[in-house]
Image 1 (tube, helix red, strand yellow):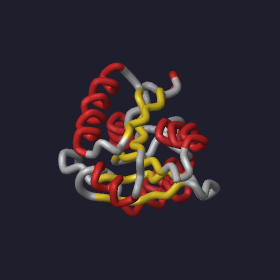
Image 2 (cartoon, rainbow, N blue to C red):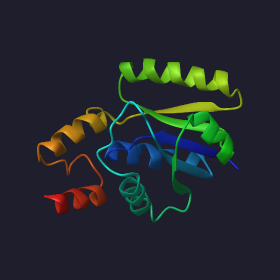
Image 3 (cartoon, rainbow, N blue to C red):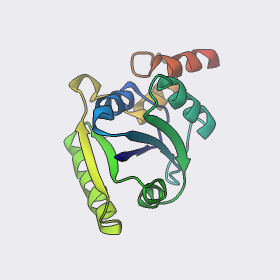
Image 4 (tube, one colour):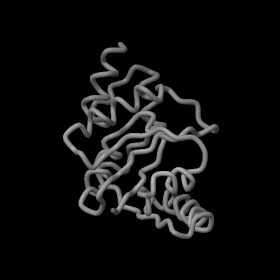
Length: 157
C-alpha cells in the first residue's frame, strides 16, 4: 500500500492545499493530511477546526485521512507506515526550503521519499500567512480557501 503524508499547519487550509492533494490522489492508496504542531508558529485556528475542515472538504474521498501529530514528521510517517512525504512548491524560495527539509528527512529516515508537486500558476500567491493577515483585518478570502473554510469564516463575522 502506497501511503503519503502531506504535512502542514493548514492554518487555514487553502485551495492550493486542496489542489495538491486532489492531484496526488492517483499516485497513492492513501494520503494522510497531517496537521503538525509547529512551536515556531502561533495558530489562528484550533486543531479541531482544521481537522473538521479537512474531513468535510474530502468527505467524498475515502483515500484521504486527517490526523494531528506532534514531533518529527519522519517519526509520524514511520508510525503511519508511510513511504512518502508529499509537498507542494510555489516558488524557488519554497524549493530551497523543501530541498533542505527533504534531504534532512531522508537522512533521518532513508526509507522515506519526498514527492513534490508544482503548484498551479493561479495558486502561487496563496499563502496561509497572508490569508491569516487578511482574515485578521476582516478581508474577504473566499477566493483562496475551500467553501467549507469560507463558510466557517463568514460565521465568525
